[in-house]
Image 1 (cartoon, rainbow, N blue to C red):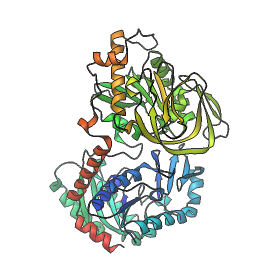
Image 2: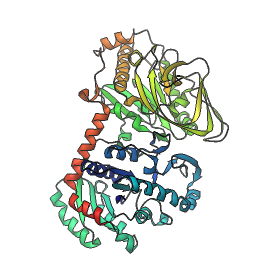
Image 3: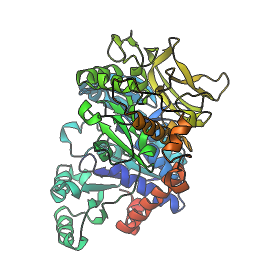
Image 4: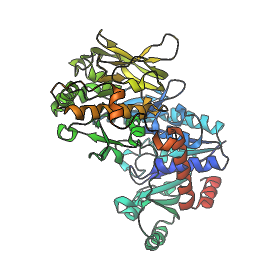
Length: 530
């Protein structure tokens, strides 16, 4: 049976996911077969496993760090917020239903067997399980039937490391308060404290470390410095979503929708040389970018209303009329069509006009599509010649079906038998959409996408493009790229591919954990249990 250790935090975004991934990598490097586990995750970033089930991306990242295939047992309960008080509840990778918070909390005790079964399955297969908590264990109003923190630690008989974020201030108060709000038997399960996101001279912190150890009778296992290690962010607290200003180069604007999901789709674009990727929430921030991306969302119709209310919908239509490329992914793809219909009340109910940039319609259904796909861009791809014929892959997670009403071009096909359509575009190629999350990650796709946009920008500069004004012809994409000084797309990371880059980041994370924590003591805690 596997040995287990749990990472809990004094608050959300204290660094639990980050450190759990780091420990997964360290244990993997030391020769152990490691699995991550988070009983209940609340996040809009999700993933489809090989067997077509849905789980949170944080545990996918941790599985990658551990060098194992993600499986839904690593995250048996996923909550995807659809409003301020409600979420879609996904259990064992399948939709259980939509619940208001009070209703869900009243049913949590019924889900304990689900969590126990998933944990037992992993324990039979792996040597070590690194368990991540959620929020804080000291949320005393939520402790009954807890499936996030100490309730899981007791179930797993797992010793706990408690992480505090010093960058926000008050780390000693948060560590002390968290410990003291727990029951005595819960306090006894905390075997070590970790201070995360430290800046400066650690010698100045050392007197405080001794004081907190004396106050709570729990050793400090280490201080982790603030680092620039680049692994995926878990949720909407991600700092990258606060990037608002253009920093030079090709300007790609992602609309930060209220229910934005799977923003990890754009990580690879963010790392391309000469690309400035930013997130915008209103028309003034949007300006006149070189391309606009409408991302995935957990509530397409509600977010479409938001686009109209703040003027972004009209601004995007004006930019599209001026031949600024507009790309929609999943919910963003649905918004691009002429009409959205929700006959079963899956999201909003009723019928709503879309942005009208694609001659397509979406009908929401009760069944969620969850599948992984290998795709290939069409050979004839006006406006996106550099992407023509390129292979890609990704996954679909959506509740609607989008149909071509006759005026769309088919821009991407599945590689399986029958070659199903995976993406649509308008006749000129300035507007494209797909349900395929992660398609930018395939080798060369992001680079060529950015190079095509850069070529379009140079051509537009020569014709002084203005939103709402019909541009003059600027020549072929190849001519525009040549004029832009970029005849061939420049590879990302100086020749590395995205997967290799991520592997290097996991190794850097492991080095950080080893240098910051007393790993000998961590192994002792793991061996002794509770």
